[in-house]
Each structure stands twice: as C-alpha cells, then as structure tokens.
Image (cartoon, rainbow, N blue to C red; front, side, top):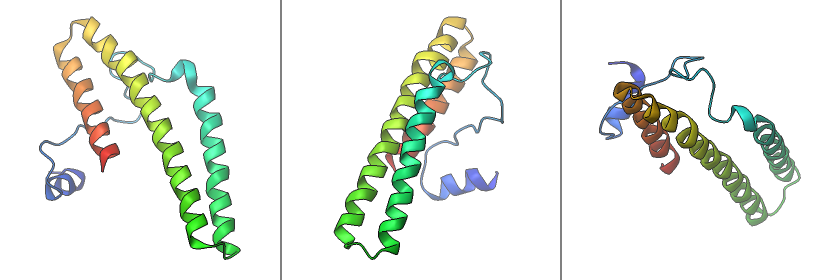
Length: 122
C-alpha cells in the first residue's frame, strides 16, 4: 500500500482511487479541456490575482471579515474551475471510454471522476 493509499484508508475512504501517471490520458491522448485551455488559463490568472489581493489585504491589516469575504470569493472561483474540469472530463474522457467499448477503460475513468468528486466535496 502506498503512502497515498494509506492516507485515504486512514480517512475512511472506501476504495483507493487510481492515480494517473503524468501524461496518462488513457486511450484518448489529450485531456478533456484541450479545446478550452485558454479560458481556463485566463480564469486561473484572475484567481491568482485575487489571491495576491488577499495577501495584500493581510499585509495592510484589512478587517478580518473583509479578508474572509475575499477568501470565500477565491474558493468559489476555484470550485467553478473544478466543476468545469469535471464536466469536461465526463463529456470527453468518460464519454469516449464509454463509446470505445473497453469496459476496463470506462471503469477506470469512472473511478477517476468519482475520486475527483470525493476530493472536491471534502
């Protein structure tokens, strides 16, 4: 059992989630967001700016509730990006695995998406 699997087992998760190897996109060869990379990068750049703004707020001793409000906005923005990636994964990777007829690949993609959803819900 790897350290990652042991950590998940200690947290009470049911089954280990397969960890994809770098560059492993199953039989498809590209990630589900491949055609929409630019909007994701733009959104992440905006979020990066928001995080820098929160950093400045703390440096400037901004009232704690105002800092928490901005942290909440950053969290929601990241969750929005994550949901977009989940949607892309389902509509591209899982969809393609389902149409390939390879049940093992489909099971692997389903395990991946469920693992991602579990992590997002923590």
